[in-house]
Amino acid sequence: MKYMLLIYAASVDAASQCTPQDWIEHEKAMRDAGVLVGGHSLADLTTATTVRVDAAGERNVTDGPFAETREVLGGYEVIDVPNLDVALDWAARCPGSRGGGSVVVRPIADFGDSTD
Amino acid sequence: MGESDAAAEGLRDGRPSTCPDSASPSAATSIEAVFREERGRLLAALVHRFGDLDLAEEVASEAVEAALVHWPADGVPRRPGAWLLTTARRKAVDRLRRDTAYAARLAVLQVEADRADPSPPADADGDLPDERLQLFFTCAHPALSAEDRGALTLRCLAGLTTPEVARAFLIPTATMAQRIVRVKRKIRQARIPFRVPGPDELPDRLPGVLQVLYSLYTEGYAASSGPNLQRLDVAEEALRLTRILYRLLPAEREIAGLLALLLSTHARRDARTGLDGEIRLLDEQDRSRWDRTMIEEGRELAVTALTGGPPGPYGVQAAIAALHVEAQDVDCTDWPQIVALYDVLLRLTPSPVVAVNRAVAVAMRDGPEAGLRLLAALADEPRLRGYGPYPTARGDLLRRLDRCDEAASAYREALELAHTEPERAHLRRRLASVRRGCSTESPEL
Image (cartoon, rainbow over all chains, first blue to last red; front, side, top):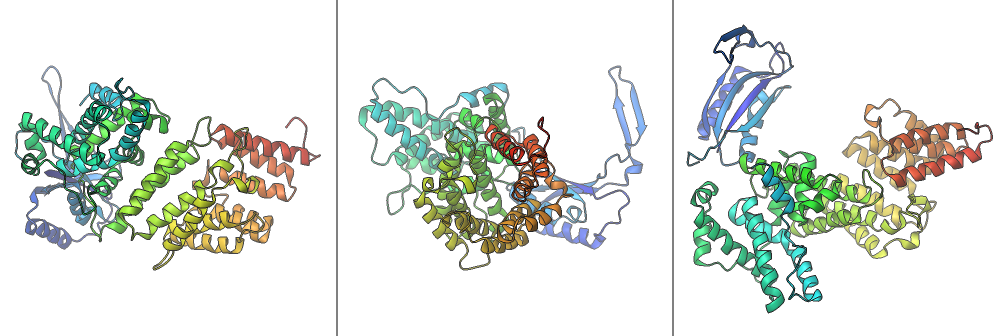
């Protein structure tokens, strides 16, 4: 069963309490446990660009979005674990869940075409 | 899953209301009793076996339907639970054989073994293994909302039908059916496991299960809204489930504490309302109507809860409740001891509601002024906004000091916040009594 862990930073400006070393150790722990499927950190939100295509096929490109809420998606991890309890354990071990940040755990949809 | 599933959920009924004509009334009654008792256990055993709540519910209902056909003619089997489980498991295996895609998704490991030997395992006493503990933890999983946890616990463990659960929460059956479909879908799709947390996780997870049972009890005992103060069937289900949980985890002192608390509270159920249905507070209750057997059982469990380790919040509340019901009357109550217990409780679970209760106990020990001073210190507490018992407590203490105008204004504030008609009637009565007591009060109030 695959879950995506969406890692929300505490705030755009807040100095993170986690060191790069914390993230390196977290990733190593997930690799050693054999649960890590993939994951990335995202570049700063100010670099984001939004694309919409309307009914006429017209492409509309805008700068942003900019942070309107306190929490900003800063990265994600995909893990493969037996059940939600294990996924929640990994979410709790993620450095992004501390210091006012949060991790949202979402099961990856299973449309029945895979064996897991 | 869509609307039709929700409709089916509403109609699905483990205990069909119409029995076959051949069933004599007494046979129907005993079958009814068996289903009530066995349903939660049957469901738990099936979930444990197949790991799927929907499948478990479907085949449990089919097994019950089969029993309604066979039992009135053949008699109730010697081990009705085992009969139901064997029947349900055969039906589940048939269903999974027909629907191999579904079976593959469930990754059912036990099916092959079931085909070979469909008789359920029994322990030395011939009883079925009790798998309900897993179901308690799944129904109270922290990934579910508080209201969903209560509804699911009533549905799956107490064996209530969806319309009954809807009545318990005073919401329409269709709304409840949709909620149950949604919560079962989350369990399945997010794969919330059916498992008992390990000893290292238990301190984190057990309080959630106890909270569900406590909330169900208070929902039934002091109905949050509606015409009746008490919905005793819900309270009694909560009490029954707490007994089962204690049997399953007898070493957990906080379960003993919760059970003791519920027993000491439930012992007073008949005395809580007068003949007119109006609320009677502790000091106004006819103590001869209290249930002495329950009080004694609660007292013994409270001792168990507080023995052999640091006290937990339910153990302390149980001790407070036990002191209340042990006393001959309000004046004989051991108020110093109750204040001391509230001090412990405030340390364990700091909350303004506990602080209000402590202030009332201090008023009983040291006089109303002392209690009022403590209540005044809580006046700016945001978590007490809209909390009716706070102005009620102030009103009661002001009344004892003959400060009738202030008492009347406190009671009027409480009246605005009261949710049930018996509470409102009680407050109106108090309001009338302080008006009579105060000549200075203007007559139109």
